[in-house]
Length: 213
Image (cartoon, rainbow, N blue to C red; front, top):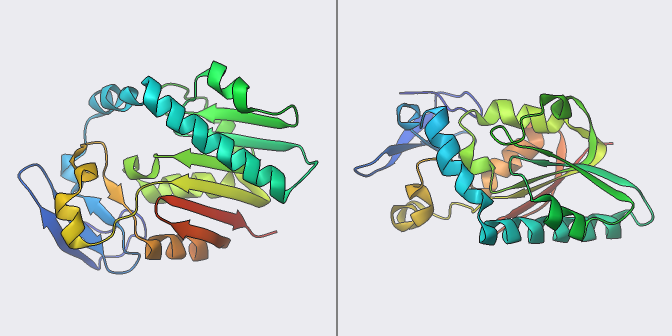
């Protein structure tokens, strides 16, 4: 039985199985994850992941970032905001359409914008739109995100929440082979505590945290 890829505990139990994959649930951090033996190879994952560059998904990403920038500017009026969009690249034309003069946004994508130097800087905020479910090594990615935040910085996450085992069986989201990690509200409570962040909001498919000052 593999250990949990997020908290590394061995308290994992079988959760669900279909003809494609089987999934396990961690009793400690409540992460549900696919059997690591079913992970796609990098080239296959890149090809599938690249579908996110389609127009409709780009618009969804733009709306998420625009909403986040509006909220943060309300929380910190008249402040210059420097952020990183982690995991998905928004087309430059859409990005320029939502940025204000006092806002800056760098973009990192492991496949299409792999500028690792960006991961060694710190930002006022980091946004992750539909990225967490792709994490094959969620503990490693989580540490990257924590280190990229300034003290008092905000982390915004969009990922569909797992509701129940019954719902999971019928959930189309699990059928995408690049979706390997699934989160419950308890998982984000664990992550907030582990990363010394304040969990401001966690509902539906949106999470907002703030790093301690």
